[in-house]
Image (cartoon, rainbow, N blue to C red; front, side, top):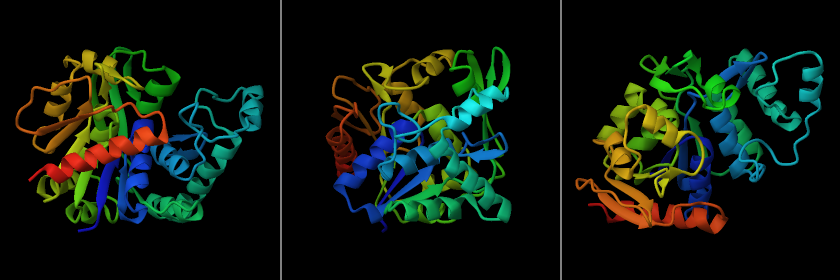
Length: 307
């Protein structure tokens, strides 16, 4: 067995991974990261969920803002605006360095996996960070204003359009990145972070070989609910659930992961009536480092209690 695997995306996922690193040996943790949010902007390959995790685990994240780097400057964006360039996706000067480095590496024939690993090593991140795939996968949303790529919906339109369906272009043909399937199959525990199930976790599950590995692994799989008191801490989870016709409760989260998870960790004030999985409670709002460690510890304890 090889430790703990976390399926993650976005800020909530990064918080759980950071908490996990406080309670177990970081070298035993493997984070498999959503890349359905990746896109090309101004000719650059941007991997928002990978970058959020890299910044968070290396201590470079802007924790107050919830995205991007601390001590950022905006000279590039200001000059871009002067020229009439697209400024809806905010690119800070420090953040740009990572996008330029990644794009240059991909142009040389390097993979997203190798580039990510090199940055993690450079920044002293001991946990293993694996993109879900090195192949292109794009989260596409069928909305009341037409089909939208994820970043256009999430950033430019601020999640305002109503969503009718979600698809992951390229997922059926995508292969897991090197090490992904092996990490899942040899894990002691698999955790699903409190990331948006429909936008941040489903892209991973849409890759057939990843879904099969999760179905076949002997490790207990525990999801952490993204809901606290019937609300999402961040992002469009609740709005999206309503638009997709789902009750906004933990029963919906449990049913969404039915057949894969063995347990669900939910907030102390919430409940879940699904009876075929183990349920545990803890305060799941993660503000401080101690909060993050507590949630990670509770998720591990629930997994350890599953036969």
